[in-house]
Image (cartoon, rainbow, N blue to C red; front, side, top):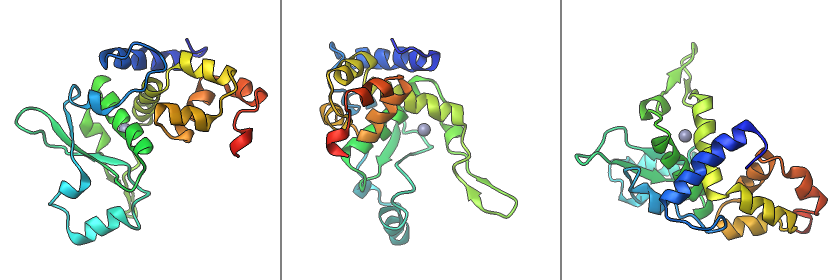
Length: 200
Ligand SMILES: [Zn+2]
């Protein structure tokens, strides 16, 4: 178990999600798509969304592509599921983390309405980032722990594997692995073993 309360909080919930996905070993790769249906999230390809104007489409895939990672419909389908799209300009690894975060929101019982808040400040500027930070942190942290479990991560770090190698193993981004190393308080072990020295 990770040494910090926050780390353990993520780990316990992440491990439950892995077990739910039927994974038996801590280094097995979790495919978030296998969990999506249990969370009643239906992932649809971006191209399948017909309601977007050409301008919106162009913005989402062009100049605005770095400003969003995914989106979920606020209205449920008759069977209770919600449609979700992932940013197709992001690599599969990043899409996996986005989907995993959305799944975590559902399993952690976060209210979707809370996440879709869009506020305007006094000058009228929209601030879509004004979400509940604690909720976002819990969902991302739990999703990341489900994708890269502590025990496997620690073993790989102590064996001198780089964040790039660990990322390749779990099909996640290097940024997510480094986030996990840091939040798990393994960064000094990682550096001592020359972690990342080969690919930086
Ligand atoms: Zn979120």
